[in-house]
Amino acid sequence: MSSNATILDGKLLARLLETDLKQRVEKDAAQYGRKPGLAVILVGNNPASQYYVRTKEKVAKRAGLKSFDTRLPEDASFEQVAEAIKSYNQNPEVDGILLQLPVPRHLNSDKLLDLIDPAKDADGLHPHNQGLLMTGKKGVRPCTPLGTVKLLDLALSGVDISQKGVEVSKIPEADLSGKSAVVVGRSILVGKPVSLLLLDRNATVTLAHSRTDDLAAVCKKADIVVAAVGVPGLVKGDWIKPGAIVLDVGINRLPDGSLTGDVEFDEAAKRAAAITPVPGGVGPMTVMMLIYNTYLNYNNAMGKS
Ligand code: NDP
Image 1 (spheres, helix red, strand yellow):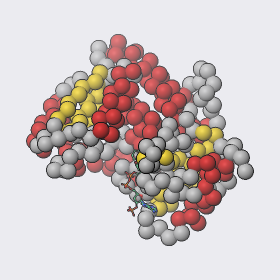
Image 2 (cartoon, protein in one colour):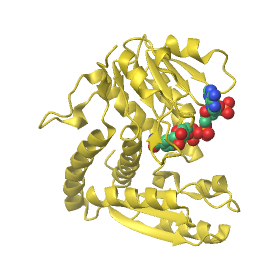
Image 3 (cartoon, helix red, strand yellow):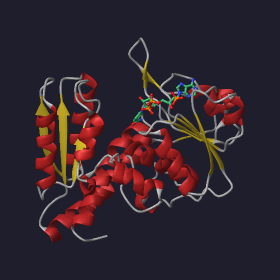
C-alpha cells in the first residue's frame, strides 16, 4: 500500500500564520503606539530549554513583537523567579509571560505559574485559563493543544497551503459533529486540553491513557487520532482507520539523535487521509500559538476584543 496521505506541514502553516500576524501587529502598533510584548523567563542551563527559548524569541521578533528576557541561574530561589514574574505582571508593555518549563527541581513550577497574571498568560496553562477552557468560555488556550487543533482545521478545510497567496487566517474552525476522536495521553499540558478542544467542536472524544484496555481497538474506531504519550511508535500504523486524520504530538529523541513521534509514521501514512510529521508538525505550531496568545492578550489589553 502506498501513501496518499496529506502531510500536514506545521512548519509552513506556522510561517504563514506568522506572516499574517506580522501584518496585523504592524497595523496595531501604529494605531496603539506600542507592539505586543512577550517576556520569557528561563531558569538554569537546560540545553533543550535554552534552545526552545531561543526559537520562541526568534519567532516573536520575526512577528514584530517586543521581547523581554530574564535569565536566572540554576540555583535561583523561588523568590527571585517570583520577583521576575511579578515585575512583568506590572509592566504595561508586557502582554505575554512565559516561564520556560521544566524549572530546576527545587522550584515549585505550579506555584510559580499561579503567580502569572492570567491576562498575561502566554502558555494558557494558568488555572484560571484552564478553567475557562473547561467551561467553554473565551480565553487563551494551551499552545500545543491549540496548534494541534489548527492542524486538524487545516486537514478538514482541504486548503492547500503550498499554493501562493493562500489566506491562512481564513481556514475555518472545523465542526466535528459525528466524528469520533481518540486522544492518547491525559496530561494537563496536552492530552486533557486537546480532548476539551475537540469536545468543544462537537467530536465524540475518548481520552485514552496507560490504563486503557486494548488501545489498538480504541484507535481503530477513530476518525481522528491524537497521540501525546512520549513513547516512540506506540501507535501502530495498522491501528489507523482508513481515511482517519492523525495528529502526532510526541517528540522522542532516538539514540542516533534523530527525532520521532508516537505514531509509526510510514505505516500510518498508508492508511490516513492526513498526518502530521515529526519533526515539522505540531512542534512549530506550538511556538506560533505562544505568539498568537500574546497577541490575543494584547488585543484584550487594548480593549479590542
Ligand atoms: P506526559 O508524560 O505528561 O503524559 C504522557 C501520557 O501518556 C500520560 O497520560 C500517560 O498515561 C500516557 N501513556 C504513557 N504510556 C502509555 C501507554 N503505553 N499507552 C497509553 N498511554 C500511555 O507527557 P506530555 O503530555 O507532556 O507529552 C507527551 C508527548 O508530547 C511527549 O513526547 C512530549 O515530548 C510531547 N510534547 C510535544 C510538544 C510539541 O510542541 N509538539 C509539546 C509538549 C509535549 P497515564 O496518565 O496513565 O500515566
